Each structure stands twice: as structure tokens, then as C-alpha cells.
Amino acid sequence: MFLRASFLCLGAVLAATEARAAPAPGLPPIRHVFVLVLENTSYSRTFAPHSDAPYLAHTLPARGALLMQYFAIGHASLDNYVAMVSGQAPNHETQLDCPTFSDFRLSAPALDPSGQALGAGCVYPPLVRTLPDQLEAAGFTWKAYMEDMGNDPHREPATCGHVPVGAADPTSLAQRGDQYAAKHDPFVYFHSLIDNQARCESHVVNLARLPADLASAATTPNYVFITPNLCNDGHDAQCVDGRTGGLVAIDAFLRQWVPLILDSPAYQADGMLIVTFDEGDGVGREGSGACCGEQPLAGARYAPGFNGPGGGRVGAVVLSPFVKAGTVSAVPYNHYALLKTVEAIFGLEPLGYAAAAGPRVFGADVFSAAAPHPPAR
Image (cartoon, rainbow, N blue to C red):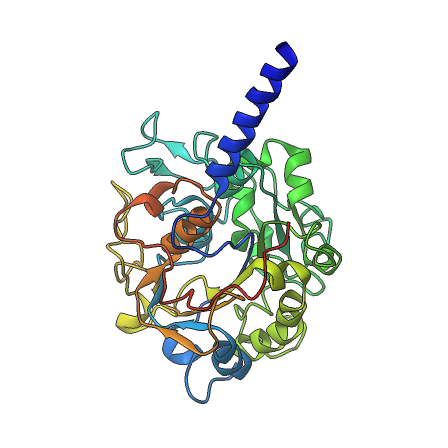
């Protein structure tokens, strides 16, 4: 009797876990999400008819969906990356990319009703949950792949790359042979992740590890976050190694890495790749515009976009077996909406401003194709 009861109890737990992990109604059964983030270019330049990144601007949208009204949430870089994985709004230190790797200083002991940590600083306290925390609790896997991280061990470690809390961060400027920037690696800005060294080191790794992990669906994490180095993400117009940066470097990087993802068993079975930019160029209305009812952090010193309400219209491309080739969507989305979508895909509750009414989950305007075959197990 005891054994039978134990099995019944275990079955109930597994059933509850499976139900919790199911995608939200209306979403396809995606089980592998790839997010690739680039730097500092507004939509009208990136996706121009004669763009310097034709592979991104024309080839990839022809294979998937172009989100014409996709917006960043702030300036400069770090606040956008933080928002993508936690729903936390910009504060005046993340807006300045945290030149010192300082602790976040809470002005209230608990999150506010919108799930925001009130105060300012860089490394968020353990009470701020992240998407990785949610994924692990629900039984899903994740990994962040950072190009060049650890190439120079005197600057940052080879895994979980960050300086000690309170230290100046030397990675904001590229150096020859190591163009990793911690400000483009949101995962190291949360105590919930970096305080467990072994956990962080096993999840935040160099991009060179990605090809081996893509070899099978079983070795591919459910959630993959990819950050190119300061040249290949377009951040530097002229790269420290002498190459041309900007959109030219972006296009070369994507031509190398996107096919590896699209050809992987995980992507082909049940994957989604989104390629987007952290922020616009800050020029004019497009460069600091916002959508989706974006709200600033209560008590914030500056507007999220400094000169405007948001980080600007940057656009995004979504590729998936569940996306019809050549789809174009004019529905407004932003980084909070991306987080909300990923959480809905994995059956998770939205965090921070992703839980607000304005950001919406990607809908039928994006996922317009039927599944070509059953998803991988």
C-alpha cells in the first residue's frame, strides 16, 4: 500500500510539473530557444534596402519573421540585457553600464508591486529572480555563450566572467585577443547566479563550446543566450584587431553562426532563434522611442532612454520551424515582451515588467506555420 501510494504521489508531482512546464495556450511546442543579441543600431539603418548587413536585413527575414516594431527599453547597454532576463527596469547605474561592478543598493526591503527592486546599482540581490532561476526550478536547462570570455585570464575568468564586487570593470573596452564585455553578459549581474560559483561556471561559458553542445538535442540547452564580442556584435565601428566593425562585422558573424544553429537537431525539431539588438543608436525619435506602455523604475533619476521613454526601435528577426518564411509583423514588442514570450513558452510566470499588461507574448503574427514534425524528446 505504501509503495503504491508513493507511486501515486510521484505521479501527481510529475503531472503537476509537466502541466506547469507546458507552453501557454496558442503557442507552438517550442522547447529550445536561442537568443542572439547585437549592438546599438536602429531599425531604419539595420534593415535598410541597402543595409551593410544584407544577410541579417534580407536573407534571414526571408526565412522567418521580421518584427518591424520591436523596441529596446533603455540606454545604454546593460539595462537592456538585464531586462531581457529579469524584467528589471533601468536604474542610473545600469544605464551607465556599471564601470564599477557595484552591489545594488535597495531603498526598500522587498520588490514593489510591479516586481521591481527599488534603488540603484549593478549586481542585484538574491531576492531578484531571473529567467535561469525559473528554468532550473521547472526542470529546464540553460546556458549563456560569451565570445572571447576568458581569453585573457588577467581580465576575467574563462567561465562566469566578472571582476570582484566593488572592483572597476576593465572589460568595457576591447583589447587584442579578448573583446569580451561583461556589460553584455547579464547573468553575472545577479547574486542568485554568481554566489553559487560552480553553478555559474557551468552555465556561463565561452562561445567556443556551442558547436559541441549543438551536436544533439539532448546536449542543447532549452534556453541559449549568445553574445558576440565587441567587434562581432557591431559595438565597435573599428575593431581593436583592425577589422571593420558595425553591421559589416555583424553580418560576417551571423553567416558563420546562424547556420550552425539552424542545422542543429534541437532547432530543427522544436527551436526558435531570435536575433535582435540591445538598443537603438539614440538618434532622434526612433533612437529612443518605446512601445508597449513601458514604465520607468519608480524613483528613477533618468528616463529609460535618457532622451526618450525607451531604447529605440531596433527590429528583430525570428526563425523557427513554426514561423512561415517571409512573415512580416507590425505588432509592437520589446525586450520585456521577449522575456514574457520565453516564459510563456516554458510555462513560467512573467517576472518584473514582463508581467505588466503592455508587453504581449508573440502571437499568430509570428507563429504562423504548423509544426513540420513532432518535437524532440
